[in-house]
Length: 330
Image (cartoon, rainbow, N blue to C red; front, top):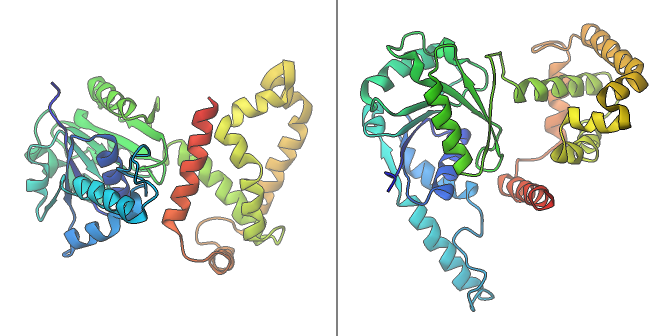
């Protein structure tokens, strides 16, 4: 029998809690240790984690008393209590990572923090433990500079929220051992995820590079007065959103080229594509669309004034519906 995983989570922010929920719900035997410097760690996690768990966790659709709201609520509470019983909270990094099979870091997005952290982790974690960073853009080669064994470190970048989104970008550094990559890929595939191994490091990796390119164009269009934040979001959710849930940009635009494929698409409307790219670059320069530029305060005010507080459970419920629909259609 395979030894149950002991997973050490470093950092209990939104990504950390999302990964805690993912591990607990996809592996019924794992134990999760959480380390964070906040003084109210345990009470905070116990109060916040249920927002990342599905409402139906632990329910049984075949039970005769499914129509009884109180009994259903009791079953869900029992299931959540069982999940939470596999949590441990730690006041020190050493106690959190000792005996761990996986150490997963979601600390501050700071190269200095991460570079200082990993030598401490490798000092106390077992030699065979997988060491993962959930960084949004700091490569393993930068984080591992002070490690004795940089071959152990690997970036596992999720798409937020990771307890729902299938994608995990597996980004090895030049020194990362092939065995570490292979073990990581096997782990996530066994849990129904979609690990994609990048062939080389790059700033921001792939998902963020694509998303931030769209974000920049969105900010430019709003700053130029072309469209409101709400209507821009409606354009995305009513067009490329559902399209890209089924096929990515290359496959989608290849279909647009008919029998001639992607080359046919570029031949037919390549001139328009090029004109859009040129127009966008001109707008970026004219409006100063870079982080901290003159556009930023106005767009931030417009966006924050348009959308109310984030409804995490509502967002997750809708996202689950989209993912289930796509999975059922495949």
